[in-house]
Image (tube, rainbow over all chains, first blue to last red; front, top):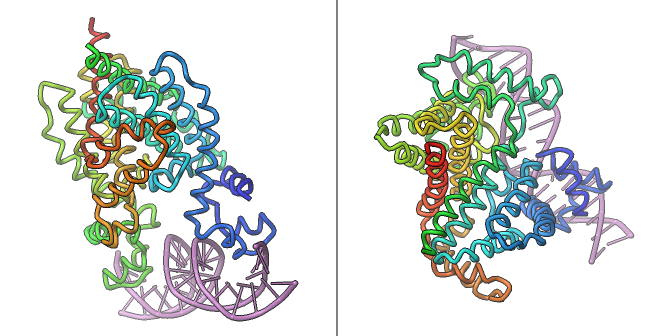
Length: 213
Length: 213
DNA sequence: ACCTGAACACCGTTCAAGT
DNA sequence: ACCTGAACACCGTTCAAGT
């Protein structure tokens, strides 16, 4: 049952409709309502299912470096969400009701606890890391333009054209855009995510050091 | 016209429907299609309208401290998005097509340029800041639970009950959650956002210092 | 150039009725 | 306990037709 849900989500993104799911299961539309009371609950279960996988994949991360563990735990969630645009969109409008999301929050928090910061700083750090992860993942994993989906344009061509458009802008008015033209053209989403995460962790490391001294 | 759109969005969140908008304007449903070719385009214009305001509000931020300017520019966008759940959701599934979003990106980027970092680091820093801002804003500004909307529960009561639920969990299994019970109960969303932003900026400051030496 | 009413194809949800 | 067909109230979008 939940298997079929996940299959459907992975094939299409927001093509998850009661009618499509019903016909996929070879049943009537109303049958689903015996197992689930609304579409929200269906998404709840689908999201919880993915988070279960993420928790499994990060369970073994317990080295002697809290920052390395935070990094690995964050990257695993990032990749799970970046692969599933519907998951990012879901997290953006729902946090509660999900046992496994709370478990993930606790896990990030436990790594932060090892830094020995006061409760407020601990709370803020754990929240910032999770917020950054799902925020960036939802942003970068967003639905690609139609032309990319239908195959008429490759990802490289799309970036090339964007760069060309930026290049046409007045360099005096758009100095930043012009300065990043080259690096943008062949950038990697995960690299971009990790670079920001490392800035965040560097700030946290500094805060931990200041508190320890 | 666009005025009416904005009015509608601020009253309800996703209650923006062609029929509701049409009756609000005292016209037929199909009339709107003369001004706008789809609902996506309608949202594009609404979002661009808000970003125009944000650009205005941050235009004067040009002190001699790039970090202070970045901070102020980021906080202004955060507050605009946190107040409008529909805007956060919109940014999560759309970045291109918006002249004013590009302008905002450029503005953040120009402040980062002043740090004198190489192009890749400049690109990553500006992207991380914007991603963090809209990610956290969309997350924190998400639709509150129904009980909060209908007035049967206050925000304080809601947090109290969440804390009570967390308190019932096994402290050995949930050490992090137990350690933040007190600070969570009366936390402030903007404080939480700014704390994470400051971690990010601290990491960036460190990177800039390392590069300068 | 601007607006309209009525239809179309969808959607989540409900409900009386079947086994 | 589990499933169904048919309806309900919505939605974005289209289109021939009006001024």
